[in-house]
Image (cartoon, rainbow, N blue to C red):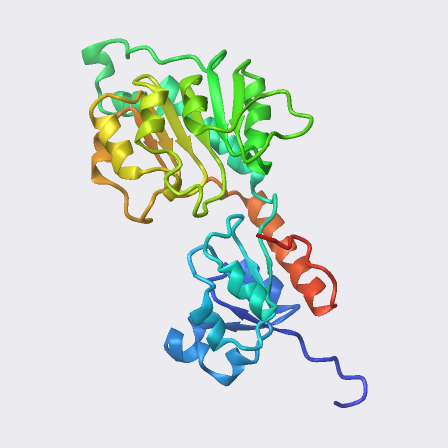
Length: 323
């Protein structure tokens, strides 16, 4: 290296598309190997010497980090995922191979909590439904729109009182809701009523808000028995992962009038959504948008930088996940 020359930038493998802003900021600090810009096929790119020599990678919730991927990337020692959920990562394989994993931490929590309450208000007060009524020219023809339901005082069960669930609970306290929760164990310093059984929680609630992590234990945690326990007037809000709900049973219960409504930001087989839901006025749908704010993305970008810089400085990752 010539005297006074800057040291080479650390190399980072990028296995998800970056926005122009993310690209520009990260490229100023790291040498980015972007799979989506390579003339090679995805598999050929991963098998290339450049990719195989990378020690750090940025991934998304849509791409699996499993044995097959790790076999192609023998030098990988750090994975930074842009999602808060880590159900796409095989922790046993990562641990065995000495690969540290960092996620989005609590960057999204506030915005997801806002969105969950927004979905709930929309379902109860029929905001989207009444807008369609107005835009369809039905107001002067049919007169006043049917009544919605108040949120204040409702019994709300939060499935997963982690960072997001806790923020949701704070917001619902302002509506004087009666809050209960389900988690692996009781949370210290929390006054809400604790349940260890999901059906018992549902039986005592008007609304379930699902915000827990997806794993083998929580897949389809909201199943037929839970829906029946919640009852025909019950409402389900999901801002976690689609597979937390048995989607087939949810569609059935809604079609049969055995649930009062649902607000869904996530689905089992995204971007595929059950067509039956499109015609239901008591269901509010959105395409996995709860985290989509400039503030969340700005926080995520800073966190990615901090995690990568910590890794290349041989320091602990900022939001390292230990399953």
